[in-house]
Amino acid sequence: MGFFDKMFEKKECAICGTELGLLGKTKINEGYLCKECAGKLSPFFSGWRSSTADDIREQLAYREANAERLASFNPTRTLSAGRTNIMLDEDAGLLIITSQSRWRDANPDIIEFSQVLGCDMDIDEHRTEVYRETEDGERKSYDPPRYDLDYDFNLTIHVNTPYFTEIGLRVNDSTIEQRGSVEYREAKRQATEVRDALVQLRQETRDSVAAAKAPKTAVTCPFCGATTIPDASGRCEYCGGAIGA
Image (cartoon, rainbow, N blue to C red; front, side, top):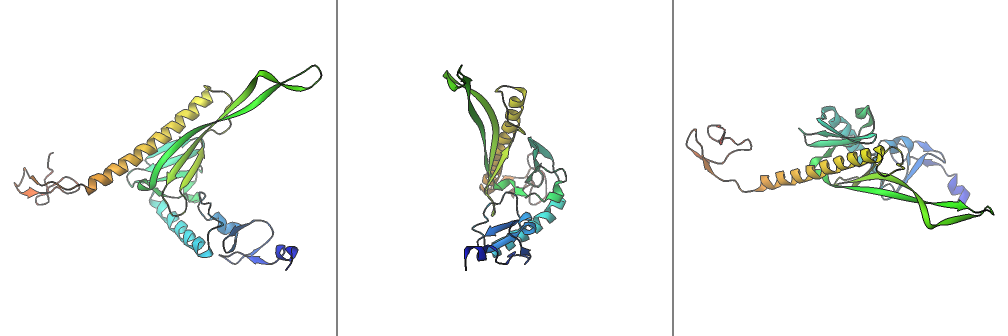
């Protein structure tokens, strides 16, 4: 079969069987996905080429379950990174990352606090040399060279999930042209707030896990006098009294 024969060979979506045209399809390890099936996957997923059809079906099942879990997701705190919001359900220990106002319809991935591994902040500086024009109309460098500088604030959130391990966010909506400007300071404030909050969240989760694994110490209940190991709420296992209250 020649090159053009392969190009025009009939292809179907490996998931739903929809016939595919030349455009609007995504290549996976075993065939192709239609635009609709590809659009149901996580927006942070990038492992198309190494994924089999079974891998994609597994992720689609996860995405359906994720949509159901969103019904009980209740944000208690929101961090802004430009047009993107990091919404935390602190009571459930969950977060989502979305730029959509109707976020439940967008089905953002629910990430457990324990899956957050860290967050890096980078300030990217872009240098564009400025030239002068000579009397002959030639373009020459200044001595020393001069540059226009632009800035972007970027966050990389590291996570431990089955389908993606990094989430990249650009904090500023448009390129910042002046260091120290109002836009520069606001982007830096937002990026720093998000980074510090996620790093703190990671540390608190680690501390909580360590505390749960620590050996329990028996104490004497001041109410019933029994020797007891307080439960998770700090209460006597026999009389229910709040020890240390």
